[in-house]
Length: 388
Image 1 (cartoon, rainbow, N blue to C red):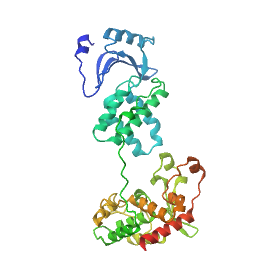
Image 2: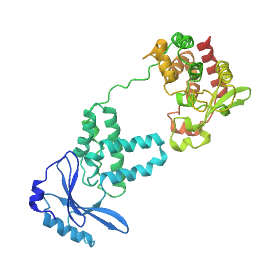
Image 3: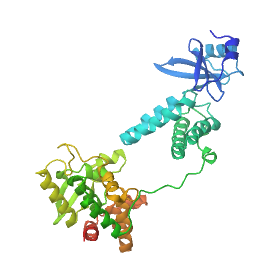
Image 4: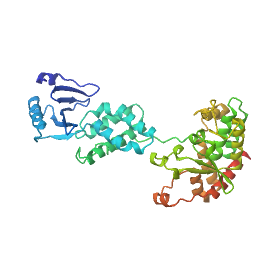
């Protein structure tokens, strides 16, 4: 059992720690100096934490008296049944993770485990104040990770919002307003991209002349440029995704390889249709000759059943003399910039070709026009510009 001397001798540490008294009663000491009496018990088969009070306002004898009352379900001053921040965060994450992509769900939890739980994870969610959260977020900011710090603040605010809704703390969100005490965001840097058709042609020509890359990688690069889709869609492309629509060759990109919410990735209706230009169809023909078949992956890597490497096209551009000037994702910006300048009246079709969702949510819900003919014309013109 603890003594007054034990409590007085307790020093702050870099991480939260507990001093146990017995029968679930313990003092939680966190780096910011807060010392909270907690009682761990079980009720109805579920574990619960009861906040008994804060030390030194509540001494050891008073903490034991309150713990005895709490064990038999009797009320006492300052009692508040609560969970720790970490428990609430994990409950919140479990609620939302099924609706996120696997990668995003893992990233959210990892960021909390790495940067937030060590600082405030062990504290009762009802007892945490804005300075506590700010201290944890500023530690991330001090490492030069301002964007990560802002994302963490948003995630913490969501956890506290969940706790409020569950009745685990009063109606105040300590992470909501601390953004005013964080550094303003830096200007974002867009992906390097060529924005003149002359430079785009020069890149493709330089790639064709570079013998250090396999022909399959060069073909995948050209197909990526001609379709302006995302790299993952091209790397995972299989021959069964090629269809014919009214005489036009169309690539049906499955939603699983699109940048979509997890729920949409499982719905076939969110597939993205890409009408292919003659130049793109010619690329597919050459890829089929290299592979010797039209089965499985279109752009195969060294192994028969694996795609080209994730960095293969990026490395190709660097070796061809365009390091820092253009990246695979940059073709989307190239297509958008050049075609919007040439066809300012076709912005909607250009956005649809890029699989961009309308900003107007009502329009996004009701306007399902595919504009295949218009997009086919756009991509034919784009192909002629690149390869002409």
